[in-house]
Length: 194
Image 1 (cartoon, one colour):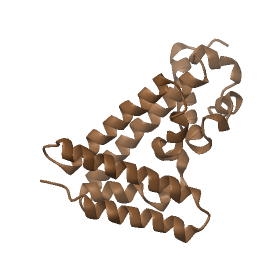
Image 2 (cartoon, rainbow, N blue to C red):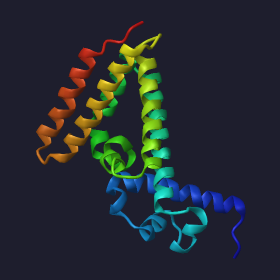
Image 3 (cartoon, rainbow, N blue to C red):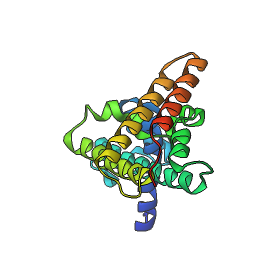
Image 4 (cartoon, rainbow, N blue to C red):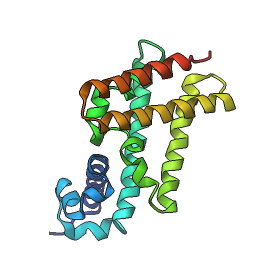
């Protein structure tokens, strides 16, 4: 049975969505093409009709994951009952985020892997990192400047690092402490400007 262009594109999007989740859960080398295609409900045979390589899929999947991350942040800002910046920090450094890497931040889940990949892949991470920093800049200040950017860089770096460490320890109390102590320190040191 011949697949329509519409169905082919839907299948392609399903593979990107599945890869976005699975790469964050298992890393780039932690899952093969057969399992990626199976997770999307497809067979391995059509992979190379949709993507040039696993690396091509990884770049598209990371872009998708990081785009979704900014959308989540925007929702958090809209719903914020406290300062929008504090709401983002508490959302990011939460047990729920820690416990769901497949639906979480690609910087925390894949940052170390991305640093070992080629220039094009690192460029995607850099572009998305700049977009996340721009988002934080605009939450922190009505008129972002270099000092605002430095504050955003420090906050995002601390958030990603704390999340990575909170996932890496066995002791649940220590894990919680990394999240809470980091969130408290970031919020205390980052009072948004009006």
